[in-house]
Structure formats: C-alpha cells, structure tokens
Amino acid sequence: MKNHLLICGVDEAGRGPLAGPVFAAAVILDSCRPIEGLGDSKKLSEKRRNYLALEIKQHALAWAIAEASVEEIDSINILRASLLAMRRAIDMLHIRPHEVLVDGLYCPDTGLPSRAIVRGDSSVASISAASILAKTARDAAMLILHETYPQYGFAAHKGYPTEAHLVALSTHGASAEHRKSFRPVREVLQQKKG
Image (cartoon, rainbow, N blue to C red; front, side):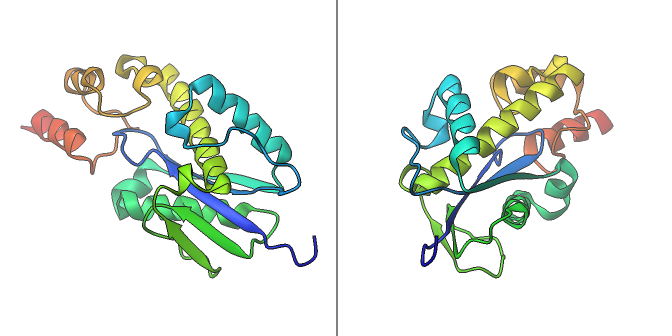
C-alpha cells in the first residue's frame, strides 16, 4: 500500500426530486480488485445497480454513504445540501484519501486536494461506484417513504417531478418529506393558503 495514491470518488443522487433527502457516497476502490461494469448509475438497470452496489461494498477499500435532509435542502439550497452530504460521506471514510474526485462542477470543502470532473460518473471508476451507492441508497430510502406516504407514488418515481407525482401533489398537498423550496411544491403550498 506504500506510495499508492488513494483516490476517493464522490457523487450525489437526488438533486432533482421534489421530495426526500439528497444522498452522497464516497468510494476508494482497490486497484488490485477491479469491479467490472461500473458506469453512470442512471444508465444502468435497477437490477444491475443493486448487484454492483453489493460488489462495491465488498471489494472497495473504503466506502461511505451520507445524506442531507429535506430541512437542510430547504434552508441552505439543494447545491449546498449536496456538497454537505458529500463532505459528510468523505468524513465518514475510515481511510483518509490523498485526492477527492467529484462528479460535476463543484467540490465540497474537505481540506483535501479535490477536482470536479464533468460527467465523471461515466469516465472515472471511483465516481461511478459512488454514483451507484448514492442512487441505490436513495432509491431504498424512497421505497421506505412510500410506505408512509403511498398516495404520492414514491416507489415508482422516487420523488422526481413526473406527471403522476405532480397530480398527487396537487390532489393531496405537500407531505413533510416534500422540499418546500422547490417551485412545484411551493406553488401547491401557496394554493392551499390562498
């Protein structure tokens, strides 16, 4: 392990949905145990993502998943909440990486050398791995929320602003898990007041 650069890949899941927390994952892959088939989590089937998530958890040198709550999203905005979740995931790693590679345009403030890589989830293995862990963790959380709030159909759309979700939002109003700072939710809340 001496002289081996520990690269941590980081990505988030759930910036676009109208409900639920935003999740982030940090992964340090083991170069001696490569994982076949890593890629952008959004382009993989659910079955493939779940399989790869198990492989990553078994074979990575270190991994962590963290989240930022709906309340945090509403108070500091979705970008800052995403970066906060990323920083939490990196802080949870039991190995300190030498460098952090983040999918997108922005890096969380970690005090570590960091680089943002646009479309990193499809070009950097450790970011792909982080993308898969963040997405599978968030999807699992939305299935649990579905049990509490079945009227919104979270199991199907995972909180994204699909037509079915917007109709449910308009019919039932916003739940405690909806992001009040997001326009479609804000508009529904204003209508209910008016």
